[in-house]
Amino acid sequence: GESVGLHLPTLSVQEGDNSIINCAYSNSASDYFIWYKQESGKGPQFIIDIRSNMDKRQGQRVTVLLNKTVKHLSLQIAATQPGDSAVYFCAERDRQGGSEKLVFGKGTKLTVNP
Amino acid sequence: KAGVTQTPRYLIKTRGQQVTLSCSPISGHRSVSWYQQTPGQGLQFLFEYFSETQRNKGNFPGRFSGRQFSNSRSEMNVSTLELGDSALYLCASSLRPWEQFFGPGTRLTVL
Image 1 (spheres, one colour):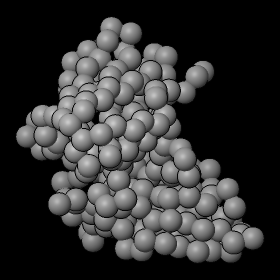
Image 2: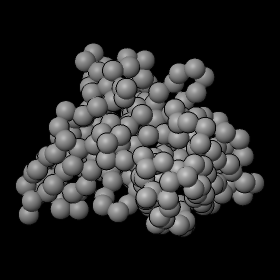
Image 3: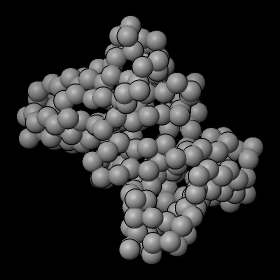
Image 4: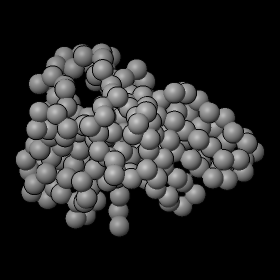
């Protein structure tokens, strides 16, 4: 089965609040993680990535935290805006049998209320 | 710079038929990956091509195949279509490993 999953399928926040989207992974050997945003009718859009030698990485209004002890990944969005409404996926680079692929979680739907 | 383009955007086929989907990557990107997205299974990796060679492969049956041309454009083919093949098929191109830029997808419906 999938090695990457999400705790919550939906998240609703008020405009201006901070959002936290969580992701659990099961492969302790995973060394690279990515967050994607997918708006309705569009393909996923790269948001931010993090390697396993880091605990935290910041982008514009977004922060990804990696806790390797509990195999947990989170995406924090500061001052959430209506344009942030989308489905967010975490993805894990899976290396097995000489092949590499990205394994995606099921996604969390973020709704931002004005 | 133009983004990833996929054609056609929508397609309706019947069981048993075959289908070919096309993807044009961002200029300069040599890696093209294909994914299947369904409500039940989510986003699943099909295969990745780099310089006309399949570099990585997911866990899909042999009915799913692909190829890449010298200009990096890629096609994927699904033979003997099944109802369960109905999905959004996404193509992504990348310059750096796994920093992928996705196209809008092709919505395939199998009747």
